[in-house]
Length: 235
Image (cartoon, rainbow, N blue to C red; front, top):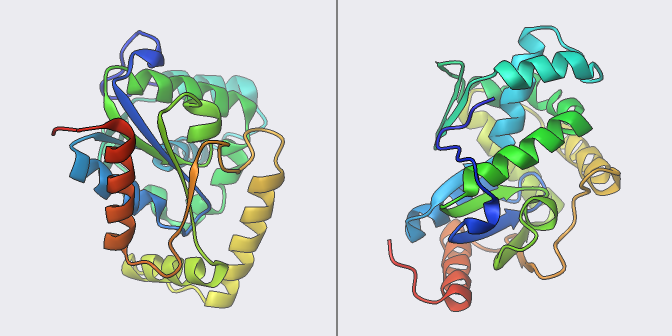
């Protein structure tokens, strides 16, 4: 797999890294993208990477337990991240990877040790030499444990379900709040209890509850904290 801007060097050479982890529906993807814009940083959407792998594997009928087949997909896949666009083998799959059919299967591939190891290495290489805001579920704990600025963005379960319903509605998908809450509760438990990179705040991460905050309020807080911890950041 190739990532746009990949460099052969260790990730520690990166100038600045901000990590935002948290459960689904907490708003971390939007917050990370807009925080990166405010700071003039690059943005890495790790969820899009896992979704793209899932899409590529499903298109080829590959089972997540077949490591040999997974090796083939990962090695041959040309993945370019140009936020907010995701290009898979030259095709813009930005909308396709958000389809419920992908959402329902992405966990299978994200839980694969083969896929996760490959992704961690790719994410670290992507970060080399960049000022970067990256978001996911293991960015501050596994991928960039030495990052100087870490956040764990969360929100009340009901709020997260409502946000997800709005997001799906905007893309033409209608799902009940009850179904979303059930899916979310199951996903949260699985993410917390998985043996490989479980969902949890890094010990030095600041926990930010966005339940009663607007997006601008979240962004204002995150930006202020980044500038306090990192000093002047010029675009």
